[in-house]
Length: 154
Image 1 (tube, rainbow, N blue to C red):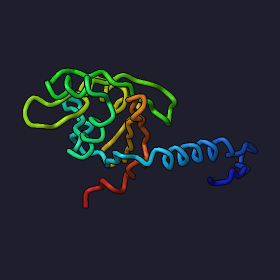
Image 2: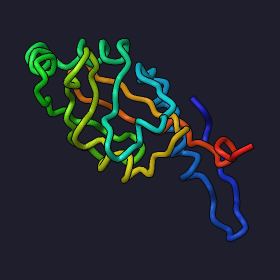
Image 3: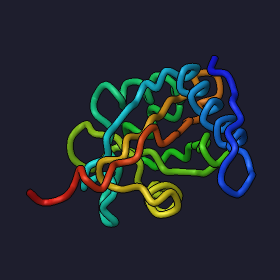
């Protein structure tokens, strides 16, 4: 576990609270060992698209949400799930479902409003998710933000 340090700033305040927050998030990252880590692409943050999981990510979700919910999702129904944003300590409800064609699963309702817009997610940001097998609650964190330099035209 990282130690907390207090660093004085120009205005005389200290940065201990920022370090404590960073340490807490790092600790959460270690605890959850994010089963789903993703660098967001255009399709993940587009306002008219759903957030889609890879086959491996969908397997992690389906193994941890309960049999009744798996059946409903596989039939194309909306499965309401809770997602805890560990960075902001807020809980949100999303709709997990199978897309109409193929065997692809993702979030439809709630992803854009509660995460893309509210957290100001951008292309290149890295996120982590984990589903707790005992509660079927999703946990979310922004693991890193894209830098502006990453997207400048050459």
